[in-house]
Amino acid sequence: MSKKAILEIDGNKYEFPIIEGTEKELGIDIKTLRGATGGITTIDPGYKNTGSCESAITFLDGEKGILRYRGYSIEELAEKADFLEVAYLLIFGELPTAEQLDKFDKDIKEESHIDEDMKRILDGFPKSAHPMGVLSSLTSALIAFNPGSVDVDSEEAMYGAIVKIMAKFPVLASWTMRKRKSLPLDYGDSSLGYVENLSKMMFSRPNKTYEANKIVNDALDKLLILHADHEQNCSTSTVRIVGSSHAGLFASLSAGISALWGPLHGGANQAVIEMLEAIREDGGDTAKYIAKAKDKEDPFRLMGFGHRVYKNFDPRAKIIKVSAEEVLGDLGIEDPVLDIAKGLAQVALEDEYFVKRKLYPNVDFYSGIIYRALGIPTEMFTVMFALGRLPGWIAQWREMRLRKEPIGRPRQIYTGANYREFKEVAKR
Ligand code: CMC
Image (cartoon, rainbow, N blue to C red; front, top):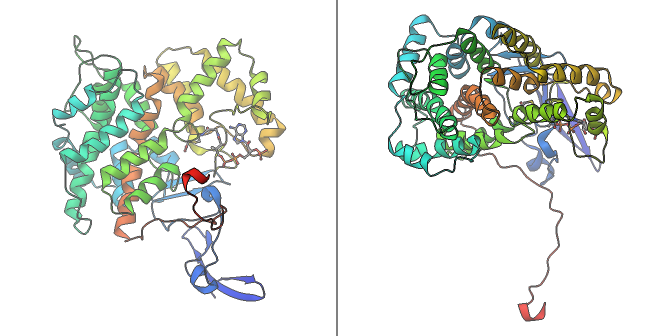
């Protein structure tokens, strides 16, 4: 028998169905709440208890530390798949056959050119501009060069828009880094794989033949996979809600990039390294910073700690911790910041404040250490996150449009002034 929820308000009872997901998650379906109760709504700031959609893309269990894309575990994908395969899986629902993967790869390469006029837009930014702001603007500017909205009822048109952005996004992302470093722009090389090409576009020098570094490319591939989707997080919800107004894919993505930028979301990876550096410069006293994080009078938070949904451990952080040690070892780099990170994690994991609140290192706690070892500047870390998250955002946007979801438009409870009569300015 299907489950039901009963809500009683002032003696009146209302019945709501409970829907069950494929992993037995339960959700009270309140679609009819306002109609049935004469306009009563729910209040849930930060949507801590609200499911905004049904989705078949990513499953995560925050209590058990499980993360799966389309049913495949993050551990297995990080070890065995490459980023392009994972992107295809997320967007289209199944792992690609060799033929499908080859076509996806070729179609992306075919679209990887950027209109020369885009360079003038990039030129207009000061060198000091944060790469996330530049990336969001350039993604939005792409619309001007690719006008016309995608016909979401045409699989072909949808596919065309997807390969376009998968192709152009890494070029734009690497250009934001090259601009800051005063390096000539690089258009990539279509004989290279997706991640190798990204690496080339970021690291090539005008006076040197580019030589691929397998350790760097493997590490990048893994990091991109680990960031590729995370169900209804802040930036993904932004992409879905912007897209729900039938704004186009690129416009929705540009909004998602802005949402990701914040230090409570993707911007945490930059904030973590800046925090670890500050601790190092301050003599490496981790206990002092743990105390600051616990002090309610102090706005300082331990960046890279805590998560809205993981209340046990973040499975991505587990993989990245091991990967950070391996990459640093393979590249022969000793980074004192890694020791500070490990020390900080150790103290926090045993401290009652963090234990009680179930605060554990998240994906961003160790990722910056790897990016740094790979020679990526700190302010580019969140751009790396965006590169990884791109297929997730696309998949979520596509799912939302294919399911013909209604426009996202939450309600509120008004707490402002009641009706007041207007007073002329001279009488105020
Ligand atoms: N340092 C110190 N205290 C913390 C921290 C932290 N990093 N995170 C949460 N708390 C405390 C918070 O003060 C609150 O304490 P109390 O119950 O006494 O008021 C309690 O833990 C619950 O925190 P919350 O802010 O209500 O939790 P939330 O689910 O709204 O926030 C979070 C989740 C990730 C925004 C938050 O943990 C945080 O700010 N972490 C640091 C930033 C960070 O690392 N963000 C990256 C998240 S992972 C990448 C991604 O997917 O975005």
